Image (cartoon, rainbow, N blue to C red; front, top):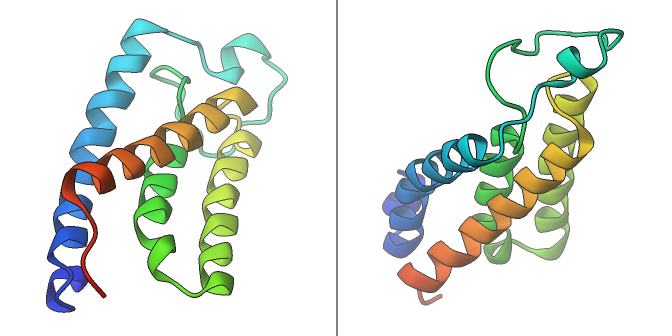
Length: 129
């Protein structure tokens, strides 16, 4: 909505498509490669508020965080863009520390998210500045 109000129609379109595309790919990958959550593999994992149901690979939280960063960071000054990557990385790390994901799940989610952002940018294009 903010992108549309700012006159960045292509960014607004990419942002609107981001979650449906991410969810479809995430769920598809989880069906193709079912992976149990760490709680089932290592019963000693301390679980914070991690879900006990569903598959672990890839991390959907990391995927959507990095999708958002991949769409917005190129439009920001360097330091602000770097901060968005740090925050998205924090999302991925927190999911591991909660016992919701293995490290590879978060890496795969981050990679998926950046791939989605790149693909959406390629298809939709960038707004002229």
